[in-house]
Length: 434
Image 1 (cartoon, rainbow, N blue to C red):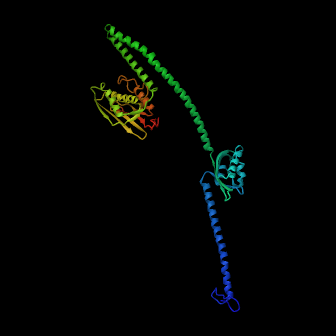
Image 2 (cartoon, one colour):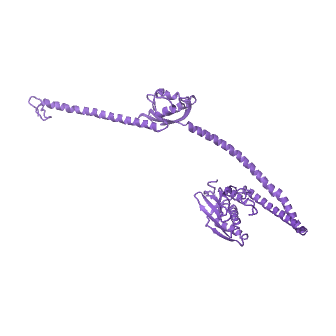
Image 3 (cartoon, rainbow, N blue to C red):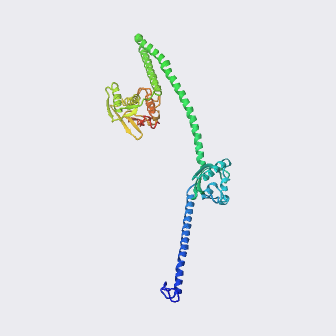
């Protein structure tokens, strides 16, 4: 309500004094301005703290990596380097001066144009990422190979305003790669040389096989034939000593014929095609055992044949492997009153391992390395017959299947012979040829 003098009631502060009332109203009108200033101060403080934390994180990242972190302000053209830049390239902060020129002038002259063109193209073309590999000089004058990568930031108008990145010294890595390439080239050269040598050896082996089969077998047949003719027609004219001599020569000729045949078999194994297919191993082993029936008549043999899995192999060659190993077990248990022969298998993740174990004479393990070599025998021929080629054939066959052969034994307590066949892929190829 108005007063008589035309002034308004000062009721805002609960008094009748109009002057006081207007003063209170003036204070209230000033409050919003002060609040806005306080809010601005609080926001500035918050942003300052966020910036400080961001810079701390950036600095921590620069210490956490071996790379040289950098930050390029494209507006002021100022460049900031992380601590690892000074550690890696041995400069001081004063030497870099915070200018982009501190980077560009240390790029190798032969690389500078390419590097600068690429970075300006990325900046001007609105791209976000840039990378280049080039040579950068260290303070001691040595050029290091660096892999430099950066990310370009743009403002709301699409203009590039900042670029951050990391420079990694990859000199050691590139040197290792170059050495690896050199080693690979040397290895390829050696492989080529070795391939030629193997081809030449194969030709020589084929020539040897032909020579053995024709040049040696023919005269041996003549010698054996005339000795047999002599024995038929003139045996009664010979005294006991002459008969003994004739018998020795005939036996030697027979042994030589067997040896020649064994050598031919060994040479053919390296040239024959391996025809891989499904083999029912259990049935195959039973057939091999039956093939020795005539040789073991009168002997007591306790067989222990495990359930054997089917495998992928050349059936003919696998039969020969089992025949040689089982034949050896029968041979070297001949002096036992009761021979014990066990044939089993061990399944492994990458291969199937077969074994043949016997209770025969065994052997000294220090000679185990000779077992699968041609003409290597651990027992004299007077004790046990043979030419020392059977196990060499086993090794060659198994190797051609991608497997391995080995043996364990103890003198007087028997031996165990092992061979492995690697599992096959769907295509039937060997997965891990040795």
